[in-house]
Structures are given as structure tokens and as C-alpha cells.
Length: 148
Image (cartoon, rainbow, N blue to C red; front, top):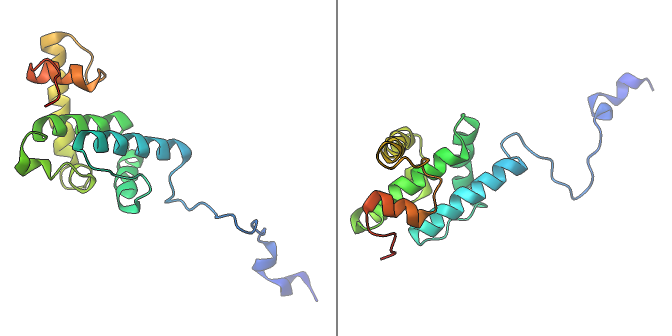
């Protein structure tokens, strides 16, 4: 038999049994760490648990990260919307990945968060959204950073 008879399958290297081949849609280790950090912050701020292993949540965040947004961009949206909505029972329900990171609203939420950052820098001279949440709340709301 000639080597042509074996066909293209013969040229393919065999993968190790039990080892899953990474797909292009799978997050890299760095992206997975960012997804976990972002959802961890959202879970902390919303009082709900959002797992980085939930495919829908991971895909929303991965799309934004691969679209050129940084982890800090997404965290700024979480901080800004949490500060804006957390005390409002009507809006609190929207502190979730589908709302914050969905294609319809993310750009608007990021613009609002960046505007809040610019206001903080202008008024207080602080670096934008890199302070602990309690200090961030102190400057935004003037409530001494107290949790309610």
C-alpha cells in the first residue's frame, strides 16, 4: 500500500487519552484568572454567587476581554453599577453578568464608570477605581465607607 492510502488521518498526531484538546473559544490561563476575578468581585458586591465555570458568564466576559477591554474595565463597571444600584431593590436585581457584560449595555456602563473615575480624579486627585471598595464608596457617596 502506498502512503497515500493512509490518507490525512495518518498525518494527524494522536492526542493523549483523557486529555481534552483546547478549543479557540476556551479561555487561556490568564483569561480564566480575569474571569474568576471579575465574577468574584461581582459576587462580593451583589451578594450572589457567580461561578467562573458557568459557560454563559465566561463567554460574555471572554468576548469583552478578546474585544480589547481590560479586566480593570470590567471591574470598573462592576464597581460603578454596584455603587449606583446596590441600595435600590428595583435595580439590584440587574447586578448580574448578563446585564453588565451583555453587548447591548456594556459600552454605556463603561462610559459611565469612566466618567465617575474622571470626576474622582478631578475632585479628589485619587487614581481611578484602584482603591479598596470601602474607600471608593467613601469618596463616591461620602458615607465613610460603612457597609449598610
